[in-house]
Length: 490
Picture 1 (spheres, rainbow, N blue to C red):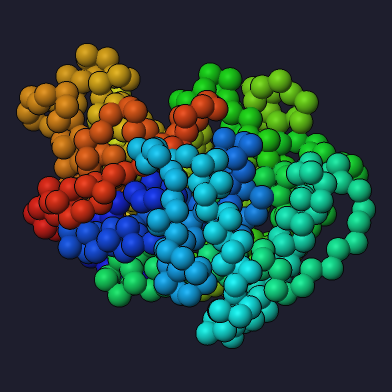
Picture 2 (cartoon, rainbow, N blue to C red):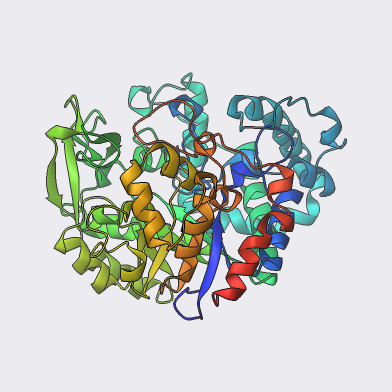
């Protein structure tokens, strides 16, 4: 669904990991279906999630740092649904030993879930015969990334999980019935069932893809010629951003950079395949750090901070022309935050991708002319109160704003209100503005505070752990949103 081919609409941002349930983190199980029912009843049209790729628990469990840009996170496979498919002999709910479901516990989820997935994979050849045709089709159609990913995981295990540039050369022969193939199929199978259910309820799913991929990933290992690496596999420069709202020294992400000029055709083809696959999973996709396609911040690999980087020219409109030629109906929007110059604005305009407007950034001294101020937001954009990288609205209002800024917001809203009700008024501004699509994080709908923040850029502790409770995903929690949605024509 293209958000700009329909009337005004709204949706909610909530990642799969944040859904309630057993086994340490959210998954594609019954609570995901209940959540879709609640969204539909509340007259929402969109559900936005974060990347579904595997996470690396050694690097903060970020969904934006993955060993694969294509593979799915095994932790999102529902053990209960595996049992319903006949792939587990015993209902796993009775053996669940997770004790604290108030937050996501990734190590606990791995310890609890992976033995169940291995058991299901072992049973698949005999007990999963009703899925074998779909399995073989999946393996054949996705072989261009799946074979490399499975081999990468095996080599990782064989080399005691060292990074790929420290591996010795070895020969591996992987059988089609290898459990990694089966686990990736089970992820895809359960996700497609959930996605189809969402579509049947009138809910479109917005996915999220990072512009960069992890250095220690199947993508870089199997496509080294596409990246700016030394002969030993070490990046010459890495991705990041200069000093910004989140950090006075900028952010150094560590991702290798694409060889946009030297290997233009090959890099473009890789991106086209990536977009095509993502659009087989989602109805629309958000591309993270869109400005990197206009120009990107290249930091010397040995630099102590991101301050030492330089701007370099990105691929620009030729990449998006190539994507449009290959995928004419691609529904894409841009995370166009950060340092935005005229080149980025021109690329947005030429690509046809709508950009994002974040209300938390609007209430400064220049509110009269600020492009994110509600009265200045144009129709062809997507408005958020905040993203996964922002504080919750209540947390932001209470702990990040000065008294003068709080007073300014109250004046803008034409009313006085208690601090604890800030989210209600900012939500209303987001839903009432001219933008055709508004997305609200569930934390802001619930009026939660800083302890419910999803991620704090530039920090390494406590991120990606927030989790909703069962009462948060029922329709009752969305009643106020439903009323505003109807009242404001969304």
